[in-house]
Length: 348
Length: 220
Image 1 (cartoon, rainbow over the protein chains, first blue to last red):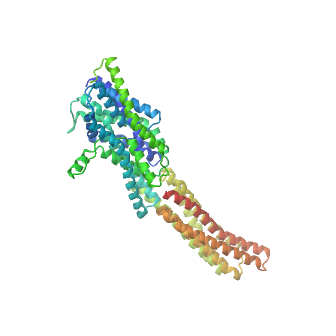
Image 2 (cartoon, helix red, strand yellow):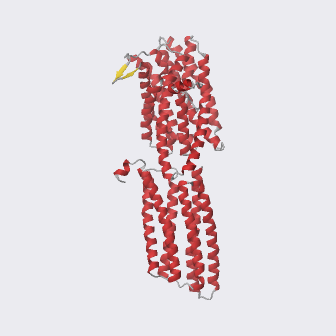
Image 3 (cartoon, one colour):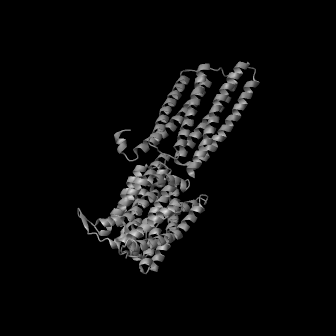
């Protein structure tokens, strides 16, 4: 492999690391914050399933990003991912709810603008509409699940201690599913832009064939896992307080709803099934893990009488929707200009 | 914990669950023994049957102590029910104190052997019955805290009613004692026993008050 590929990949890996360190908290934050699950257990499970999700189910949402803009040169992909990473960093610094998904879309549009490629407005509209649908869908799923669980618990009359044990197991399973869904859905943000520009040869390991894209997904998944293992602890410990005090049951529901939504926006299997049933399909698009969790928690809060809703958090999300892609688009555009004219790289 | 238990899914959970259930069983058993002990004394004095009841209450109390320590240990070493373990410990400790109160009433009777005139017998019996009912309702409230926190309020309500009734009986009994022509030392001794027995119901009410808060926390 050409070592320069790794240099160009570094921005994507950095983005993956940032994603792992931030978004693992959406999956395991409340469980770890409430001391229901140990951080080390959470980090190991999260790392393993994020990689599995990326490699096995990562193709769907990457394909959609590819349709938005097929970045044809490695330096261009490098700049797109770097622009996303920089805006994620800047937005996080200013305390705004940030999504790598929105950043990378802004970056791709920036590359399209710079390279003079047309942006498929239909795909763009689909993607933007999912940013709105994702938290709303998550809220609806959370409300339904919460109601059902509540009914079950009143009927089942579980002992407090047993409920605690079930909840721990539930949080672990939901976390594993959440990590898988996160890997499947968000791997597109991390390495999706590199797919058209990195023609790796296929590798065969013990009867398993890893395609070029899957090798990228594996590398990206590992970057996310490194982010989880090295930097997620602090974020997980604080996530409970930033979202307000929620009960372990509400935390469980939030993680499950988040995971269902992320999985729905990533699963080709589900898409095929919906098609076969003649139902409308869900677009395979990278969505924001943070916004899915916040959507679920807002849903549960509304169900409980809306006392816990934090309008500022909601306001931040809306600002994030607008600011993140525009900022990334601008950074990417100017970054590409420098890369092309100062460093003499071919960016498209 | 045995190796077999470790291999069993939720083995530790089941153990802890059964220890909590056993602890509550000890409390209701000692409530029965307390009632029988006082009744025996009122009827027949400090005979061997009374001594046997006192011994049983002592044993139940120390077994419950052992269970309480195990439960505390288990909850804290394995960080179980992190959001409610403070409440569970508070509950177990205050319930344990109920048994301590039974023990001290029976010990005081065994040591002082108060000479209770026939006319006050019925009053002491009624008071003991009321106190025991308050305790029984408290045990039910505690059991439902673990399985069905929504019904804690129903049992707590009963604890309050029995406590109020016990207060009425104890006030009347004290009025009767001090209205009699016994000498002051005996009056004071008899009043002391009234207060000691009534104290159990007062304590049960305090525990029920705490339990109400714990239950609200669980149902939110």
